[in-house]
Length: 322
Image (cartoon, rainbow, N blue to C red; front, side):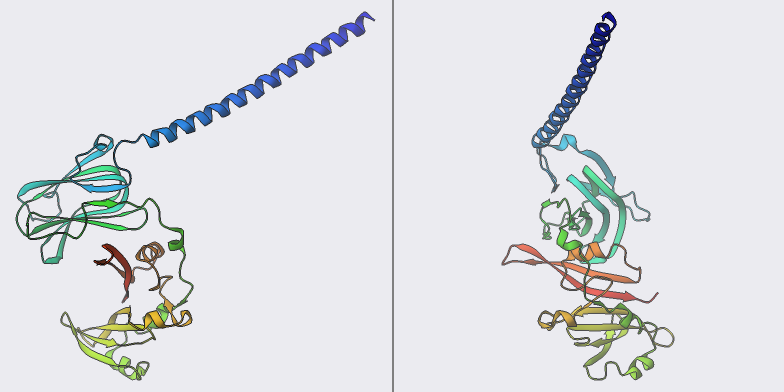
């Protein structure tokens, strides 16, 4: 009898210990969850308490928040060319957020084709660029970059008071690309059709008879001959540049939408490596990330005075001879 009572007491003690252990374990888990929730709430509160702008690029900003930016100084004489600038001005660009493909270069006003790169960064985040540049009238320094939404931003820095940049001093940085811009085109891909003309001689092109029923303009562009073909295929204008060296051959093709493009059916539209003229410039940039080197897209933004804003468009598809 005594043995049975001892066994019962032992079992009761064991169960009590297990219960306490389970309760302790449960309490620890609950405390951990509460700690995690507290940490999340504190993190959210810190975000709300961020001093200064968020997701903005601002020229010569002097307000709050600069203390949280890393500062990078750029002397425009640090370039791989023999050209040396007489430093006489300093501009600052505060980047509150992340930007990519940052390019800093020089060009003389009216001759931006003479662009000379000075400094490039793959990406920057929460950074103030301090740019020591020339103050000579007519010498322009161009800073460009993309935000995470594939929007391009540009600053033109120069001393000439006669020049007024259309780019605002404060530019909103988009944190991510819209989901609708991530979708490649569903139109039939027409790249191979045009690549078939690359390397074709002028005589071969004239005898292929593909453009026999459309208007063709022959001329020169920057000293090189070209064929300009209107409304072929439907809704597009096509320009075929001809190399003037040796036997004339087609070495590049530019395809642009014409006035008829907006009226044609989707079944008649074409894409070029997943890019088409219905896309925004941001969708075009996103979908061309993995394109071939011999394919390019001309993208541009127009300032619409009636909207007091920029409108975007795909300008042209460019195919170059490999």
